[in-house]
Image (cartoon, rainbow, N blue to C red):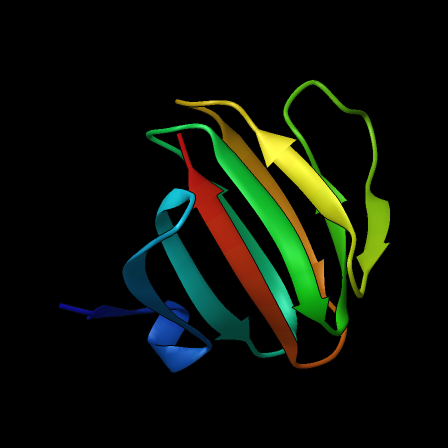
Length: 93
């Protein structure tokens, strides 16, 4: 069954499911700045919108838009600046 999660006072909402590639979430983010932590490796794909991403070990932010993908290893923190309402798909390993 699906599991819905809400973060940052409702500014980030995700729905967890088991897809053909395994455990995943789809979600939306309102404009804002966020810090997330990982427990598993996460492969994030921007489905619609855009965001600036600061990955672990990076000194600055990098822009990601429609169709772009980035990977965050397990047990790491990463920062996002979401510029417009943005949808994503996240795959976990």
